[in-house]
Each structure stands twice: as C-alpha cells, then as structure tokens.
Figure 1 (cartoon, one colour):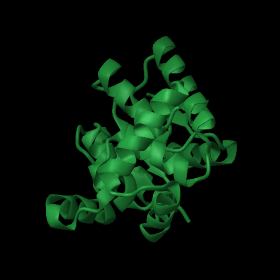
Figure 2: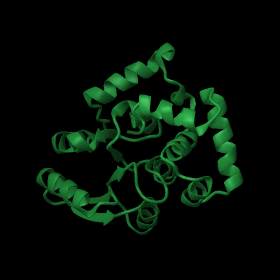
Figure 3: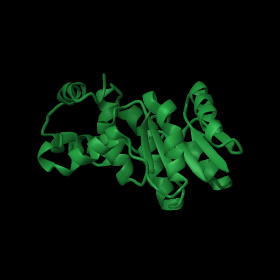
Figure 4: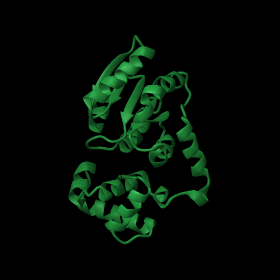
Length: 208
C-alpha cells in the first residue's frame, strides 16, 4: 500500500508515519511539504491514501482537495488540521474528504479512521458529527458559512494580516481578483472593513 503524507513540518510527517506504521506495517510512505508537491507527486505515482494538512505553503488544503477529487475521485483523503471541527470539517466533507481529524487527536483517531476508510467508509469523530448536525440548522449558521471555500481562504488570509499582493501570490491570481474576493466577502459578511472581519474572526475562533 502506498500512502502519501502531506504536511509542511517534517516532525509531524514522521509522527503520522509512526502512527500509521503500527496499523499498516507493510505500507510504504511518501512525504511532501506543500500543496503543489501533492499534485506533482500524484501525477507520477499511484497512491491508495492521502493524508493532507489543510494549512500548507502555497495552495491551501481545501484548494488541493478540490483539485484531487476532480482528477482522482476514488482516492481517499484524510484532512488534518489544527483548526477546530466547526471551522473546516463540513467544508472538507462536502468537498469529498473521507475524514477530518484535528491534529490534537490524531494519535487516537488516525488509525481508527484509516481502518474505516480502507473499508470504503467515511470516518466521523464526535466533533465532526456535531458540526454536521449544526450545519443542518440554517438558523444557527454563522455568517462565514455563507462564503465559498475560496472566499473563506481569502478571508482567513486578510484577517491574518496578509496584503492583497501576498494573497495574490499565494493563490496565483491577480490583485484585482483578490480585491473582487474581498468585496464579495465584505458584502456577504455584511461588513465594511478588514478590522470588522478581524474582530469577527477572533470571536469565532477562526484566528487566535
């Protein structure tokens, strides 16, 4: 079995491999450190499982996930994140991920998730299940849930203090396109400035 591990921290990749090696002792692992490397490696080799960090240099995990499910729809993808389930889990599962696991619980949940996924199932932790149930109640949906995946990523970059130029470079789009995303975000969020977005993001624990 060939497994691709994508995380920009070598020590995290090593820890994930140690966890999975106990469950899959005959598996072979390939490591990459960015979203662009993920797509390049998948084009060269065949894998049975991808473990993907959602926050990496360059393209975001959400963007990579979308691309992967178009090109390799049968490849199971486990999304790892430091962010709480309510921020990303529903987006990732709707995007085709087989599981969303918080890094804090990876040691306990990753092996369980892999076993279910290799049987053709999805893995839902208790936190993810609660997020899914909450998403069904439209009256309780926060404003940022109205944003598309790309708009949400741009918002996170804006409230993290990145300039329009930096965001454009990271997403490989023009400053004009980033400005268009910003205008849409402000409109959907019913706000008028980055400062308002930042206060909201802190309150919603989107950033610390």
